[in-house]
Length: 367
Image (cartoon, rainbow, N blue to C red):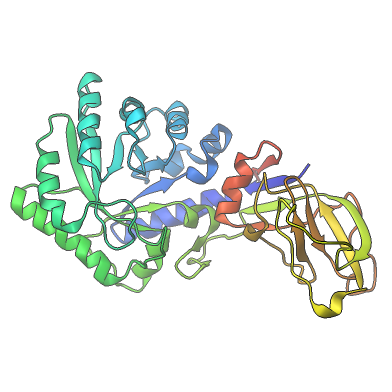
């Protein structure tokens, strides 16, 4: 069976390095674990006392994951990182200490749930800065905050924004400065200080190094850089973090020399993706390997290989076909056999999908 290997020591080292780096820059941060979908074994291996002591909170976008976080460590500060659905308001208050919000009606419901549970629920009010995802429109922020500020069981602990997630709007200095100015306006108007200005994520990390993050931005929400060692701003390694943290090993279940171009009338019955063909491919052959994963597990576009001769051919629900050329190494010897495993590098989204597939084995490398 195809296997996803997870390098726990390197992930832990990444988190420790981020702890030191962000602390040096006077920034608190939340470790966002949504890529792991609340896997308890992973959470126990990662969230040890030496790791979590310098982390402000741990966040996720699924309530079942937050529940697992609390079961692993009841003292963790948890943060729900998307606006809550009304059907799950009670559970949000129960399992999340903080939630990101952009709807006053939702915050009213959170207030009522918190009152019933005899709790104070903390919220970060999200502001729309151009990404057109969640966020209060800027011209409505003052009124929105004032109504929220007066709720009995709600504590507004900060303002935040989300950039780079949907349309890829970059977190430029001007965007982050806008967020800082809104914090200043709110504090002057209401005479109270906001603890957090949450304007950063993995995509924002390189801006710290360039000294173009306003000093008022004091909270980041980071997942990808901690687990993959990269920043999606330029899709490159960040500082000296490790990028060799996940490897995907599908097995070769068939390996034969076959034609490059299919034989017959090509219709619309394909349920997966398939490669294009060149005019000169007709009549030619190549070695093709069938791998034991498919679209139900992960999309091939999230996978890459160091083998430059390996090319994607097609994918169905449970199998993937790759072209491996003449199947010879640099010494002219046979490179792959049936039963061998290929090493593929999965992207952030690919790992999330693989971890959610019940057909993929997961192996935690602990040393």
